[in-house]
Amino acid sequence: MTGRDDAPRYFAPTDLDGVLRALDGADESTVVVGGGTMVVPTMTHGHLVPTVIVDLVRSGLEGIREEDGATVIGAMTTYSSLLAGERERLREPGHPLNLLVRAASGITGGPQIRNKGTLGGSAAYANPSSDVPGCLVALDARVRLASPRGVREVPAAEFYLGAFRTARRPDEVLSALVLPRGTATAWGYVKFKLVESSWPVVTSAAAVLPDGGLRVGVGGAADRPVPLDLPTPSEGTDDPAWRALVADEFARALDTHGAVPVDDVLADARYRTDITPVIVARSVAGALERRQG
Amino acid sequence: MRNIRLNVNGEDHEVEVDPRRLLVHVVREEVGLTGTHVGCLTGDCGACTVMVDDRSVKSCSVLAAGADGACVRTIEYLGTEEDLDPVQQAFLDEFAFQCGYCLPGMLLTVRELLDAEPDPDDAAILQAISGNLCRCTGYGPIVRAVRAAVRSTRGGEGS
Image (cartoon, rainbow over all chains, first blue to last red):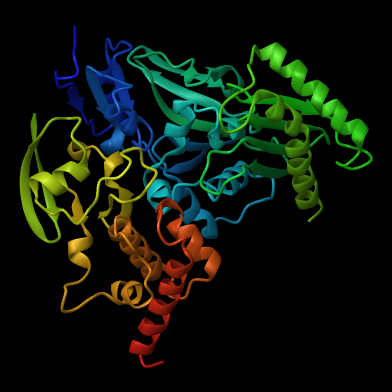
């Protein structure tokens, strides 16, 4: 038995190979720390009691690069570094980073959180209210998981299994997010919350696809991000018939993915489900506007 | 337990830490600088804000072991009683704090903002302090203080 008073073993490897060595034979009691903004407080409050800590702080798993038709984001890339590179990058409107930049600029918690919080950490922590998971679903992104046994990539829509639950195995590290290029011509993002500093109630990331259809990732509404494939509204995003279709598609997607609407003190399940078509419509309207320039 | 080295406000320290030990506790209890406050320990309130390698962080969310070798600056670095930083002077002049609990974090965050952006608009000010919770002032006086700090800094440049 490991009690709270037994200090965990601590590793801060300086490269991916070192991370994989530290993870060899890891079980549920191994905690991988990214930026630490969520995992460290969780340990402090005793909700996570690790026997081993693998800290990625020196792992070098940061940076954004282009790789075979995809943009690859190292897991330890912080929101600040994503935003800092923004001005130098001249990109087509459908570039996947444009969506993440929109989402990252609205991250709450101040510059201190954007300086430490990482895209890989947010993806792996699977907080239903975080911005990143819903964006990854809209981006058709893949999550790269490395372990001593090898590397695999899991589509974002299959990676999320529930609130704070993913397909990552205990001896795997989320090493990068792989964003395929050319999947969209424009993006829209809307985050709805009732109080400035609170977690969002519902988020919607919308992609206009090259064939004119829409791919949407809904966050916050359910215990995992929910992907929606929708037709472009011919009568505009205010059209009640199109919004009813969004509501139907959302209900169907919840069912398909076994997702459960979030019901908590911030907003009950009924409220979240009711406003989802409205938030989706706003994000789609934004994306369509940007496509038209 | 493991030994880490920290440079805090220009001074080197070597400290033995449990891997779960938080940077904020090392700064206060081992280094002995108690100007950095412990608030929520969840990364929400910002009272524990310090600079690590020139970037603001919430030191309750930083493992001290992971900060090994870092350069840390705390509120004690910002100014002295005789020679306040312009941001400190502005907060004093504008009554921008009451109980003072959030103040060290608020001051460091505002200093970082003004170093990066010498003439921020109100939206940039509010965005910058969005991770620092004040339960006394309602933020109006804080925003006024930041504007005053901008004016005094620009005045100091003789512009």
